[in-house]
Length: 301
Ligand SMILES: [Zn+2]
Image (cartoon, rainbow, N blue to C red; front, side, top):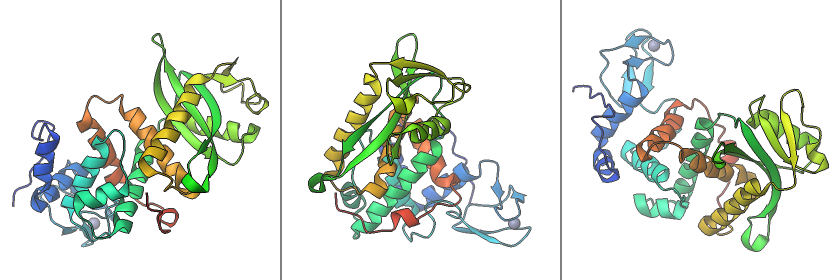
């Protein structure tokens, strides 16, 4: 078997072309191998580089002898499903700007288990969060609001949101959102430290919780109108309830916020192929994920 090195020029140009490519398990193996090890197989145990290693489901290192699966150290590992199903799922989830539910994925891949579809999407949301770790910068607006997400249970959550304002047009750039226990000085300070680059100018609501933001790190501007982030929070609430119809519980809410931010921030990428590449990089780079938070029973939505 020859190693096929996929480059941007040798990849299909359309989603249909990708679906056709990914319908073949052998082509998926070649594709993933070239994405994971573009310069030749590198053993994850001893870092030995073997440029002659051919793609295989499991490869034995020629230096230390350790076996490595094509899915080792990725979120696809241990799921007993085909690479074809995974890649079609990643393509579908990355190209669908509005986002869809586990029921849609169950139908797409004809999975017998709703739980499997749900768990895969939770894993992809975690991969989305991992790829989207650049802080907001420049001129950044912050505010918070309470959103309803629990359907009949009428659950509510407080969320802080940050949005870059790209000058001179004043359009919204990258966004970050996070659930908080309560709006106070500590939660605002932690959020700004985690998600905003020092030196940025912050537009803040005229509320006490925002008054103690570190003035050495940020230039702060108090404003009466933080409509931009409030609109984003409202959009998130509508999006979540439209797709999942009350099927999200509080402890999973952050994953849906991460998905929403990823999709917003991906709009600045040149095309759908770049969004797919970004999500795939999160899928294959992730070394260890905490599955504890996603192993409880899903609520159907
Ligand atoms: Zn090795």
